[in-house]
Length: 341
Image (tube, rainbow, N blue to C red; front, side, top):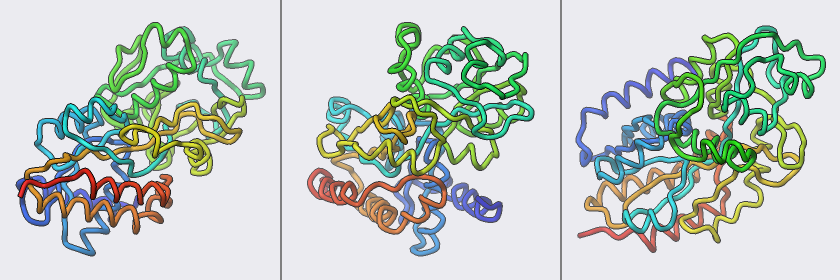
């Protein structure tokens, strides 16, 4: 993302923040930092085309869920899909906007991106505090020829309620019995060790600054911050690189139609080339909104993003939602969203 574009987006977002939720031509949303770079790009381009402004607060999925439930925003954004029961109880519907990947990133002098290989079991034990140094025997065994230093591992995690954390811990929970028993899955968990950073931005900043650190961020943040990613063993025991192709492979067999609330989970999917920590990012809106004009404006924006934002998504290393999923979403909007006139 170039500095000029980012400055313009931040100006638009800041300007919008002083508007009311019902101001004409203004959409208010909050949540996922995973999707923030993509929503920023879409907002910028849509504003140039239509004059409609998007005020999006990148506060994490947990915050997005809280704000939409408290009716302080027009939409919430989360990478941790709500269950059908949660959606029903809150009068909400959800739909996916894009697919991406959560990537382990490290800070080791002299190590190139993709040079270090990890397994889910090893990541779990690092985050559980069982593996303390980079030259641990278990790490050295799967990384022959890599100069792993006798350096303390500093674990970095998300300190805020986060869908990125939910995807990451959902994966570890599936892979590691010890992780399942001690920590489990959630947008926020009791981390056994490490330091916390707020947002994908905070984790990326810590990893860049702390020698010997390991963290997890959405792939776009790894690229933008020039962080060193690792390769990762998938269900087929193949070591794969994070990429649009490996994220697409993980999403290839997803059953969107048969999953209640479209809440598809993409971690630890089968496939030789599948990235094991993939996930979708979702939008939450009310089925019975009180402001029909804003709801119509908002859905027009999402419809435009589905159709016209495909190349932008790809350019920022997100996988666009498949056409058949978009068609299902349009039918769901027509069927489920009912305004109070």
